[in-house]
Amino acid sequence: MAGTVFVSGGSGYIAGFLIRQLVEAGWTVHTTVRNLAREAEVRASIGTDNSKLRFFAADLMSDAGWAEAMAGCSHVAHVASPLPSNAPKSDDELIVPARDGALRALKAAKAAGVKRFVMTSSMAAIAYGHPRSQTVFTEADWTDVTSPDAYAYVKSKTIAERAARDWVAAEGGDMEYVSVNPSLVLGPLQSGDFSTSLVAIQKLLEGSMPGLPNLGFGVVDVRDVADMHVRCLDLPDLAGERFICSGPFLMMADIAAILREGLGEQARKVPRRRLPDWLMRIVGRFDPVVRQVLGELGKVRDTDISHARQRLGWNPRPVEESVLDTARDMIRLGIVKV
Image 1 (cartoon, rainbow, N blue to C red):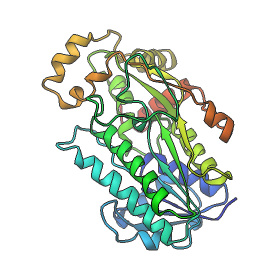
Image 2: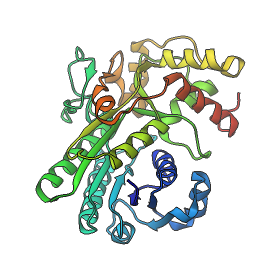
Image 3: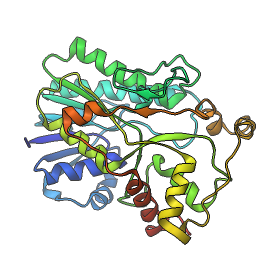
Image 4: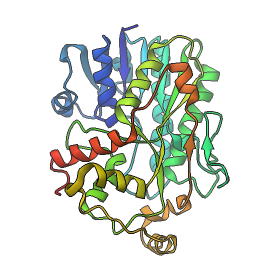
C-alpha cells in the first residue's frame, strides 16, 4: 500500500528517518514543522525525493495548520511529542502538549477521513511504577503514573497514550489506532541537530560523565523504529494494537564496553569506573536531572518483543551497530571531539 500519509514533527529524529523510508516505499508525505523557515534545512537533512514531500506549519498547542496538513491523507503517523534535555519546572510542561497534541491530531485526522492513525508512544508508558521484581514487560503492561518512579516525561507519554486510546474508543468511529512504544532510540544522525535520546552517548565519548551510574535502558535503532511505523501504517487488521519497539536492555557499563571495543583509541575518554548508588543519591540532591532517575538505579527492564515479531515480522538489528553508528556520526559531525 502507498498513498498520502501525514507525519507530525518532521524536524524530529524518528520522523526524519520515517519520512525517508515512506518516500522510498512510494508514499507521498505531508509533514509539519513549527516554523516554515526551517523547511529548507529539514529537507536537506532528510535527503529524499522532494517532489514527494510537502511541509506545513503546525504546533502541538494550536489548532492552526492541522486540517490543511492532513487534507488528502489516508494515514497518519503522529510522532511529535516533547522530549526535554532538562527536568521541567512543572510536569504539565510535558503532559499538556503531549496529551493535547495527540488529541488535536486525532480530531484533525478524523475530520480528514483518515483510515489509520499510528502514534509514537514509548516504553515510558509501559514499564514504570511496577515492583522491582518485575523485569520483563509486554504490551499488556501500563505505567502507574501515581508512582514516585513516574517522572514528568514518563507521565506525559502514559497520559497521552491513554487519552488517545480513550478518545478513539469514544469518538474515533471507523478510524484505526495503533501505538508504537520505543525504548531509548539510538542510531545514525542526519545532522548535527541531534535528539536528546543521544546525549548519553555524547557524554560517554567526551568524558564529561565522571563514571558509570548503575542505570540502564532498552535500546533500539532509529531505522528500526521507522521500519515498525511503516509496517504499522501498511499491514491490515491492526486496529487497537500496541507494539513494543526495543532491542536488549543495556546498563551504562555495557554501552561503555561496546564503545571501547568498537572505537578503540577514539573511545579513550569513555569512563571505566562505576559510580556507587550512594554517590548518585548525593548528586541528586543538587541536580534535578539526576534526581528524577534515582528510582532507576539497579532496575532492569527487559522486553518481550514476540508480539511485534509475529504480527509485524519486525526484528531489530544488533544493538552494537546502533551504539557505534551513533558514536561514529557524532565524531564525524564534530559533535564530539575525541
